[in-house]
Image 1 (cartoon, rainbow, N blue to C red):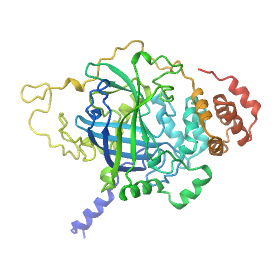
Image 2: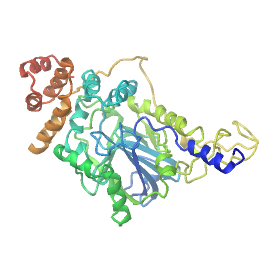
Image 3: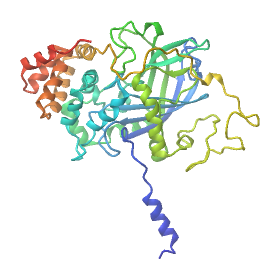
Image 4: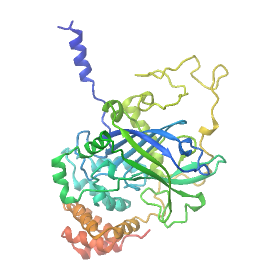
Length: 459
């Protein structure tokens, strides 16, 4: 009977349990912990999170990128490494991955990159032809693909991988001086991956391997730790490289790292949905002393991530317990669905003499001179292949062989001859031995690959 309101409303409520799945990073695993700063970098930043001895609560969400919410965790995929720092100045989100670089350098390509690597719009199945059709027209991805297809590109545990902010950021000190930095969380547990021939057995044994491994460690007191290192550049040194230092497909070669703190994870969340699923990360969440750089990908992410969360969770997503800062929030936000921000008083605007809280000038970006013209052009110093070759040559013989085994397995699914040979020419351009091995493993014509590679630019 309709009068059974308990039945009716229970079914109604059940029908509405799901929220939109993340387009990327849908499969996630969260954990709570702390970050402790150990080095004085007040010469670089006024951010209180970096004050020596400061203990800052954190929530970390690890994830795969392309898989759906229930997909196997052993996927040839970057791993999301997103950290929410609940600092005394508000939240700082460092939203990175387990590599220091990315596939593309321009945010306008991101939807295309995802579409090409997600399941086919016709069959609903991922297709190497689509992925490598995109990468064949994206030579800057050569470096990231080389990293991705190594054993470390298939971590055997979230504890056994590093985390990177990927982009260059700005640190600002009390005098308003700016330095460019990159962030690197280095696993104290070491970095380990799964060899290509072991992946099928690993999936068959437990396709929730990475979540189960992390939560088992936390529940038995084996708390994982990561040391935070930074690389620092003066603004005048950005142009000293033969590549663009703000290109996120590049590492900062020969720039030393400096340890400034340690993050420890120590608690499994009590509720998956309230934490891991409703957690909302955005690179635009920063605190005084930390600012974005001019990196094109970062600038695009500054908009896209917050917009994604507003779509998934609603206009008041920042008020959810997992996302709300641990310090008082002062803004003029009001109303909207699921608003529990508890704003008080009539003054919901500024400026005002009735109840205005003065703005803190520390929460404004440092002045950045701009010059030039608006344009939609590629950067001048691309150097798409050099660092891929340099990285390949650092690998052991086994790692090189595993890289070729894993990458050639996917390339052998590419039926478009032009795209296949274009990809082989990229890898050959990066390193002749690398390309030659892939040619042999894919039964391709080496002379054709050499000819295509000879026509590729070195810059």
